[in-house]
Length: 102
Image (cartoon, rainbow, N blue to C red; front, side, top):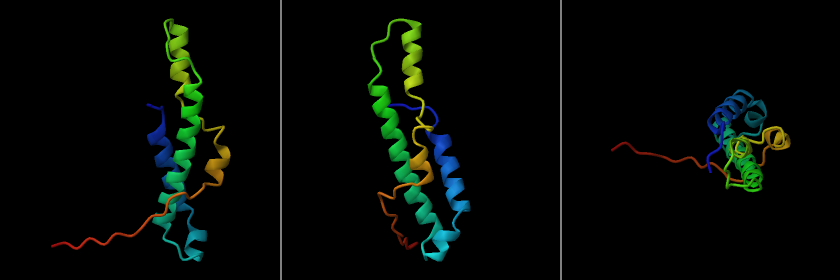
């Protein structure tokens, strides 16, 4: 489905995690790789939570009030995703890809 605010959240999270990379450097991790891994895990959690909430909303709206509820149900569940944002799960691993210019 289409959700409101995914691009804004991605940009904010990426900026935050690339700026806050001192722990990643201490562990020898690439700050870009870690930021992307955290971004993917967090966005997956937020979108899944939002999709679940949207699915619970009746999708056959006839009145303007019902339509407004559908639009509202597609707004990202950021408050409910607080723990996912503060403590992201790294479900995927970024790999360095070498590209030879030929």
